[in-house]
Image (cartoon, rainbow, N blue to C red; front, side):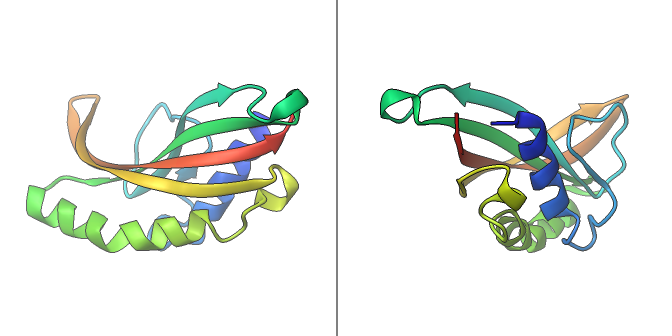
Length: 132
């Protein structure tokens, strides 16, 4: 299992979503340039299958938009949510980096503050199964 390859695979999947395209990062970036996709936090549950058969990786993927107005930002995320889910599940093996994945939830919209700017972010929960 390669967490690095899984991150890259998820980021690559997001590049197909307009308007994200080239504004996708496999790691939390130093600077946010919305609209943007970010492969964020990772949690690994080792040995989820009997006899150390596989690991379960839980990853948060964020989509961040400008928050010029709350209503406009929410409407932009409303339009992006189904596109992002479909893109993340377009290749369930991430080019061979994992055995399977599923987007289990979109955990709502929340303000994201960085460098005195406030954005609005939708966070997707992605469960990845990978051979240990």
